[in-house]
Image 1 (cartoon, one colour):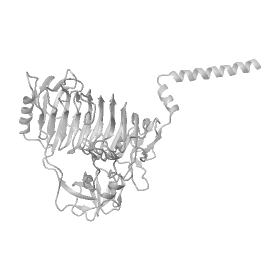
Image 2: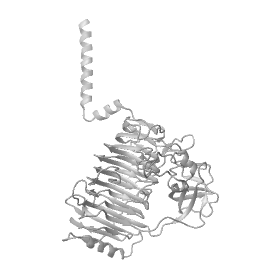
Image 3: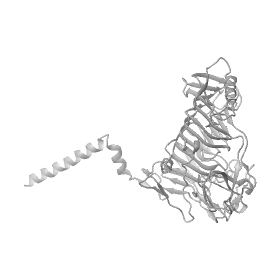
Image 4: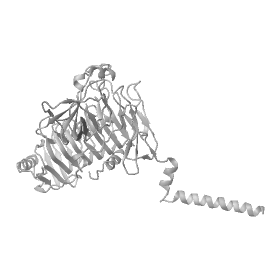
Length: 523
């Protein structure tokens, strides 16, 4: 009996070992089973996705939530990027091609647009197009399309000397308040994430009206966030209230009594303690619509790795709404592959690369994908040798999204660069450098607090500093994988950190979950 028992135990142990060994080395189950062993799926305390795909947001004591970032990019993602008919075809030619391309754009600009505001596509066939100056696109409904963004595709080269944009896409004008339309917000506090508020009198407004959600600056707000106390060095400017009047473009979705509902959320709380918010109707005459760039390789000639007398920006946008860039690569430029200025709204930049910038590695250079506009989407991007690869500037008004973007050999940090950007989602950013949301102090001429309502979701970094400003909101690092560091200045409030280095955050992408919850199926 003793021998039978011993051999039975041995047989069981052997069988158990073999089963475990086979299971552990089965390629169909190894990754999943090990991942679940290492870390179970988990959700953020700030929100959860319901079985039907809707999202429940969990407010703080003031009612603030993480905002809905889903309605960004070309037509808020509610329309797919169109395929416009080819109406002109260009071929490589001997010598400078700039005049040929400009003439084609100017000729197409004179043709009438269709009911959707489209004129057509100019196709640049495979080959090299040397350009000594800047190409200007100033009319609606035109697409510049190549036959590939590789060396064997369509290559536009900024030749010779001169720091410049190779392609400048810009309308004219500015936000202009419609006289007599302004009404004040009456709520004592409108929390971050809100899509409605009350006003003194809503009878002059209706669904479909484009409005400015206006949050004026105030001296007591500047004091409370300590931006009148920046440790000065030469050139440092303390913040002043009149420089921080924030204007957010929104559209009214409905009116109920004096309650106004808007399409995109509040991304910085409006607090009567600091200032009385307002809304007003506006016009933007001269702003372009329906312009795109597709499938082109942009390059700049350069003398050496630190040359700064050559191409600065590949594609430069301003005064445009509902445009796109898709499938481009930019190499060797000083500043950016794509730069969106303050007048750029609802632009989608996707499936593109900014590689191997050539410049001195210092301030004002290598902002690979730069955004100063509103409701813009940057997705599926790659960079090498940048500094501020996915970046916003001063007072950049959200929501804006950077999703599924990668950076390698980066020389500075991703994130809001300076002076109070509001409402940016950095979702699944993978960098061998830093993402920082912090008080940058006297860097520049007084960068100060870089931003608020900056959400880092499931990002991978070498390190990150995420701080909360002294007042007016929070910044979030949720599911971040990488080192947590203190940031430039000591003693700043810690940001909202959750699940650092924890795997299996659910949902893996906040942006995709919000898009699904909004019922958006096209991008």
